[in-house]
Image 1 (cartoon, helix red, strand yellow):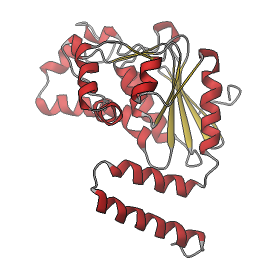
Image 2 (cartoon, rainbow, N blue to C red; image 1 turned 90 degrees about the horizontal axis):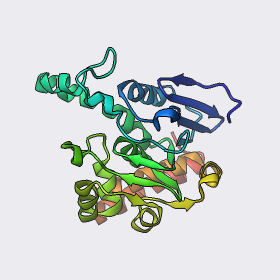
Image 3 (cartoon, rainbow, N blue to C red; image 1 turned 60 degrees about the vertical axis):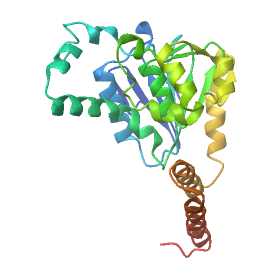
Image 4 (cartoon, rainbow, N blue to C red; image 1 turned 180 degrees about the vertical axis):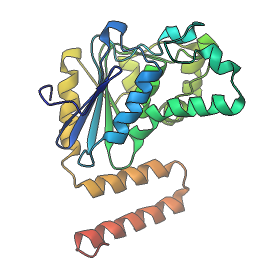
Length: 263
């Protein structure tokens, strides 16, 4: 994949497409792929420019860490050049502050689109915003040196980049509260045991394992995967009978499509 021309390469984000598989790389290893506002805009743009032929997206980080979280420069009065600091944001109106956070969240929302399956390949530190970015994906393969932590609460903040919903869904309310409120590290063995990680592999096998999973996901017909993902995503908000009805409707669509009777 490295020989392919990037579809996007800016602000620490690189998107490469190889037929049905896309790879999004956090590409600032010198800063452990720390995140800032420009990177979030680039991640959101990667979702917008993703070709329709893509079925699986792999998210990875260059270097020893997946992402060490938010660049601490955001907490300084100066902030980043040409960008508001957190202090500036705090002084804005309720509407402006809400709109700014909503814009930042866009970098974390498109990974759960129903027409793609997303895999986070995570090594080293995945802290705060890095943890939430891994949680934004459908699946997580982690290296045996992974260290997840939700550090926002220890800084007097809350996780606000869409990570709370998937975290509770994966590990339950009580454990999610404990992880967030203490800010402690979750290592590879625990991550696999409590459901944060689908698979743990040695660090030098991480990229290969992610590619193997991506290839396996391509084996089933695309529309069947889309319908299945939609069913599973909706299962937590439907009661048993509503889920049964959703299954019937989805299967009817699949049967008609296979019989050449679809729209």
